[in-house]
Amino acid sequence: MSVIYDRVALIGLGLIAGSMAHAMRRAGLAGEIVGTARSAETRAVAAEINLCDRITETAAEAVAGADLVVLAVPVGAMAAVAAEVAPHLAPGATVTDVGSVKREIIEAVGPHLPDAVHFVPGHPLAGTEHSGPRSGFAELFDNRYTLLTPVEGTDPGATAKLRALWEGCGALVEEMDAEHHDLVLAVTSHTPHLIAYTMVGVADDLRRVTDSEVIKYSAAGFRDFTRIAASDPTMWRDVFLSNKEATLEILGRFTEELFALQRAIRTGDGDHLHDYFTRTRAIRRGIIEAGQDTDAPNFGREPAKKDGPS
Amino acid sequence: MSVIYDRVALIGLGLIAGSMAHAMRRAGLAGEIVGTARSAETRAVAAEINLCDRITETAAEAVAGADLVVLAVPVGAMAAVAAEVAPHLAPGATVTDVGSVKREIIEAVGPHLPDAVHFVPGHPLAGTEHSGPRSGFAELFDNRYTLLTPVEGTDPGATAKLRALWEGCGALVEEMDAEHHDLVLAVTSHTPHLIAYTMVGVADDLRRVTDSEVIKYSAAGFRDFTRIAASDPTMWRDVFLSNKEATLEILGRFTEELFALQRAIRTGDGDHLHDYFTRTRAIRRGIIEAGQDTDAPNFGREPAKKDGPS
Ligand SMILES: NC(=O)c1ccc[n+]([C@@H]2O[C@H](COP(=O)([O-])OP(=O)(O)OC[C@H]3O[C@@H](n4cnc5c(N)ncnc54)[C@H](OP(=O)(O)O)[C@@H]3O)[C@@H](O)[C@H]2O)c1
Ligand SMILES: NC(=O)c1ccc[n+]([C@@H]2O[C@H](COP(=O)([O-])OP(=O)(O)OC[C@H]3O[C@@H](n4cnc5c(N)ncnc54)[C@H](OP(=O)(O)O)[C@@H]3O)[C@@H](O)[C@H]2O)c1
Image 1 (tube, protein in one colour):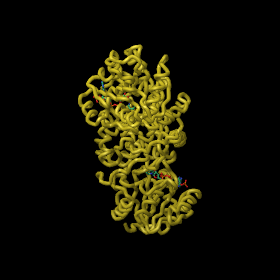
Image 2 (tube, each protein chain N blue to C red):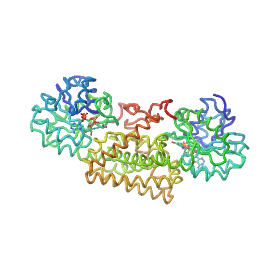
Image 3 (tube, rainbow over the protein chains, first blue to last red):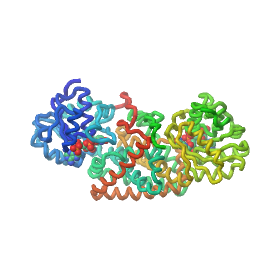
């Protein structure tokens, strides 16, 4: 593939920015990749593993002369970073972000940006529970969706170019309205994360009762929850605080339905339970057909190591 | 390995019994494997794929002369199956089960069994969301725990022999009290399943609002939930009805904590959220160290297929 942007500046060098650097290099999409991060430690690691072509100490230096600037910091830090880089942006540059929430970022970042730059907010629907400059890998976005939520009046050319970059990184790209994005993600990602965190917290409380058995005998179900609940606390705090309305709306529906199932258990209403559990299977089939997960019998996981404690 | 039981009778030929058949054959643990299932269809499939050495039409025929009888039907069907086979059990035989709940099964099955047989309840902590005679595979139990919950007065020799069988099937075996089993499993498996079913149900309701986007953009978190919520409805109905007390107890704690997090979101209490999310990470580390899951960056999953709809 050929170069899409001559100079890409990555602000923040964690899982997402790092994976973008790997993926852009894999396909040769950027003339130069410049990166920066808040801490000297992260910048040093990034330099050591050669994550970017150039590491700068400040965000201001990083964005100088860049035709694409990617804000890849926690949602709550986007506004401050935007304010910091704004005076140094090249006219005609595109600014994008990778935050997991869109409406609040648009409201927080947009006002800082000069008229001469294009703002095209984005969100790659891909991640792991790992973070930091060493956690990225080129394949992260392959066949996963990246959603762009351009605001009214955004230059279609700027959006098309950013789309081409994400497609070059392996992603399937779609555009949608920011509010709609936030609702869909509240259902598919934010509320499930909150629930997983809660369940793992309950288990943690019970360790006094059950000793370490909750860990030792962790079965399918809980094991998946613990992976979700190992995600970065700062990232998720910011997600919930900034997608407050949609998350609370979905949580309300969730507790309503949970109470109905709880009552069915209490009263021994097996038919209600059976009907409910039958209905939910169809969604799984849809996801497998959409190619967004595998149907492998062992979930495609590696077998655990024989030498684990017994 | 050498033969542990001369004749093993499998009552029910689904995921668990099928996997036991494959695993026993892999290690040569049974002189003869006899199987039976409720429906002619399942028996025909089992015969077609040569799952057992012999398939019988009735459970009574299957257990005749068997020195190990494995009840591998849904929890709610255990009592009826036990009553059916009881008059035909060979004196000195061991009866075990693989049900996901233990106290209720002991109470429901125990009274039917003659004094001359040993009853050693068991539960392999291994499963997938698939079911039926074609879903089993020999590796299912490898490095996973199987818990035995022998009742007071059980012959230690009978327990030791069953332990050897499970170890031969690749499992790590532990013994514990049935009540304790039911509490630990309520935390690590039963309540997480109920929660996953609920969240997927909520998403299903919202499909009218979000069209098929909930499926299309299903992200980590929700995607894991859908796999859990694709498990067999009959099995899970029975689990919740028969581990009612422990499940309701854990659900009560869960809603308490969820409400506290919900309030923190509503009031913007980021510190509460951050502290909570930090605490839950430790549990994940414990599970990986215990060898019960992988830390692979892509969760060890196969990449999705490129030809999925976009
Ligand atoms: N992880 C996922 O699953 C995922 C998926 C899709 C989108 N996202 C979004 O992607 C963004 C980055 O996430 P990530 O997973 O890449 O995070 P990460 O691995 O934790 O990296 C975050 C980066 O942001 C920097 N940073 C943190 N706080 C900052 C602050 N207050 N001011 C300036 N810089 C700060 C960090 O610098 P130091 O290293 O110097 O601390 C680090 O370089 C977030 O907005 C998140 O919502 C994440
Ligand atoms: N799946 C898991 O993840 C898992 C894990 C650990 C333990 N368990 C336990 O293992 C047991 C079996 O589960 P499985 O996953 O192997 O189930 P499965 O694949 O659905 O197979 C169930 C078997 O039981 C038979 N059966 C169903 N209802 C019956 C009834 N009322 N009377 C007599 N036979 C009946 C079925 O016969 P037909 O095929 O003829 O209908 C089938 O052969 C359950 O007690 C479950 O709690 C399951």
